[in-house]
Image 1 (spheres, helix red, strand yellow):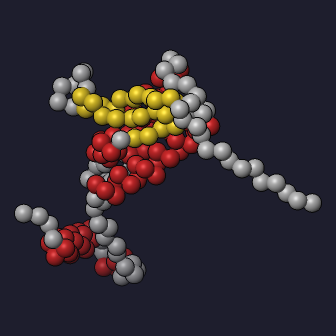
Image 2 (cartoon, rainbow, N blue to C red):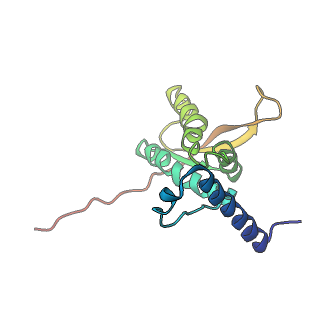
Length: 158
């Protein structure tokens, strides 16, 4: 069993009808007549949230590159962040906080404790959490040999 495009379309239309009915229950017709159109968004899929993780982690990656280090997330780490940072009610809004709590904060602690140095490629992966049996957590390891990309300076000709 799985969802087909027809199932998704029917589900979307059903959801849209419920939203419009809820609007009619809560707002007066005079107000609703002033609204040109209502847009009901589709729920985000896990691959879309994982792509958002890639986009949001870019900032952390850039900060590390300025210090001569790289950051790579395994696919399982990206999926873990997507699961921890997505809420069906709030959407992907908690994703930024999840990245900060699960990647940035522990990584900062490692950097302060001199766990990683310039030239390291830091790899974020998922491992069982010994403090919470049955749950996973992000763990960091590193390999040496990372060289940050060289940015070419713009030269002006006069």
